Length: 144
Image 1 (cartoon, helix red, strand yellow):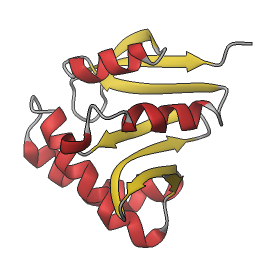
Image 2 (cartoon, rainbow, N blue to C red):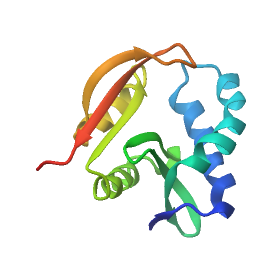
Image 3 (cartoon, rainbow, N blue to C red):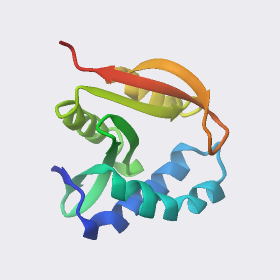
């Protein structure tokens, strides 16, 4: 089931984020991610619209949308990847927003391919201002 994140679920979402981001971004130090835990929890999550995929009472994945178009996070627990959860979260947002944009590290090839399969196109490439690693800016637009 997909639903809006409630305040009592934030810690569970942050656990999903930390476990998954460290695994997905092995080219960046674990310390970088642990240092960003509190800023994400206290800064990004509260100002984003966050949808969670919950099954059997547990959060299996989530997506965060900021400013009604920017996907700042899409993470699914590794043991639940490949089961369509990420696609369902993306489709849920596609049904609510006419345009979506995101950034994804170019070295996260699995994620780049995932977004391409779901209709996102690479618009540009840039250096991430925080980590310094290169990332793609990708976008999707609802067909008129």
